[in-house]
Image 1 (tube, one colour):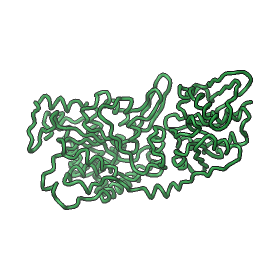
Image 2: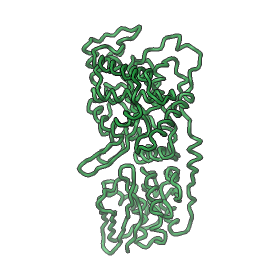
Image 3: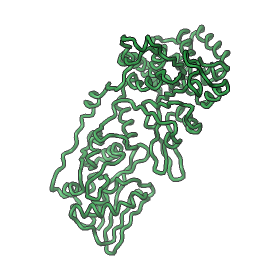
Image 4: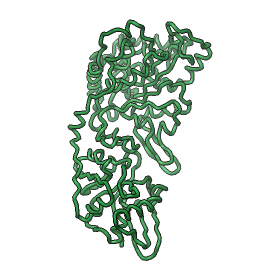
Length: 516
C-alpha cells in the first residue's frame, strides 16, 4: 500500500513543503530516496525501535520511502516522525483519514519519545500557507510554532500519542499563544542599563548617534576603560523591534537551533559577541549542512567584535560585502543560500599591542612600528565601512566613586526612537531604506547636503587627513543623524563638526599621528 505524509525542508531561513511517500509491498528491504543526508538515512533504525516501543511491529516487507521533491537535499533527523507514521499507514496499521491534513516533523528517540527540532517557525509558516488542519511537532517546539496565527499547533510527546491522534482515539489540545500580548509585555526588559556607567559621556553620545542612525562604530581605548561593558548595554538604547522584525529574527535563530524551548518571539534585539578565534564559515554561515553564521544571528541587532586586530585577517575581510549589502549569499557546489545580515557592527581595540599607549598613568612599552603595525591589522576598506570611530579614555577615581546616577537607557532610547521616526517618515517612499546608515549617494545628496559653512569645514578636514570618498559619505550620514537628534531639517556646521570628530582613526591611520 502507498501512504503520504507532509513535512518540510528548511532552505536558508525559509521552508518548503516535502511530501513523504511510503510504499510497503511484498519482499524485503528498506530504502530512502530523494537526496537524504546521513541523518535521514540513519532514521530507519530509530523508526524501527520507536514503532516497537509504541506497540506495533515494523513491517517485514519491502519498504521504499521517497522524499519529494527529489532534487532538494533533505537534512537532519526531523523526518523521523513523518517516516514512522507513513510506514504504519502504508502497512495499514493506522487510519489514513487525517494523514494528509497535518504536517508532521520531529526526531524520535529509541523509546518513542519526540525530541525537539530546528526550524519549527518557518515550517509552521509553510503549514499555514498550505492551509493544513494543523502542525504536529515536538512539545518543546510548540510555543515557537504557535506564534503563527490561523494554524493549529499540536505539541506531541511520543509517537504513541501521535498514532492515537491519527486514529481519532484522543485529541491533543492545540498550543495557543497571544503573540501580540506577550510581545508587548516583554518589550523593554534589559539586563544592563547605561545608568550604571560612570563618566564616558562622549562615548555614550557616540553610541546614541550610532543607534539613532544604525551606524557601525569602533572603540579604541586601553584595557579596563569600559569598552566591552558599554557595548553590552547597546540593545537597551536601540529602537524596539517591530513585530515583523521580531518574526524574521526569530526565524533565523529557529533555523540555527538557538531558541529556548519556551521562547515564542524574540523581543529584544540580538547581541552576538563571537571569540576572535572564530572561522570565516562560523561568522558568515554555510558549512556542510548550511546554517546561519554570527552575522545573520546578529540580524536586526548588534555584532560585537572585541579586540578587533586579534581576529584573523580573512575573517575580517569577509565582513566587507555584508556590511554594504546587508545580506550574505553563500554559493557552494551543492547548494546556494541567502541569509539576511542587517546588523550594527560594534568593534573595540587597544591603541597598541600592550594596550597602554596614551594612558594617563601607565607607560607604553611598544615601539612606533609596533603601534602602526597593530592598528594596520584592520584594513583601510573595512575601517572605511565603520561610520563612527571613537576614543575611550580611562575613567578617573572621582567619576568612578561618584554616587550620582547617570542618565538611564530609557531616556536615551526615547531620543533614539524619535530620530528613527523622522527617518522612517523621510524614507517611506524608498524601498529597503530604513535608517540614515542605509542611504545611497543619491539620498545623501538629497537629504544630507550641509550648509556652506559645514561644507567648508568638511573640505578642510578631508584635505588635512586624506580621507577617502567613502569616509566623506560616512561623515554626511552621521551628520544627518546628529541633525535628526537635534530635530533639525538641515545639516548644519556644528553637525558636520561633531561627525568629523567621530573619525578619529582616519586622523591617526592616514596622517601618521597617534590617536591619543
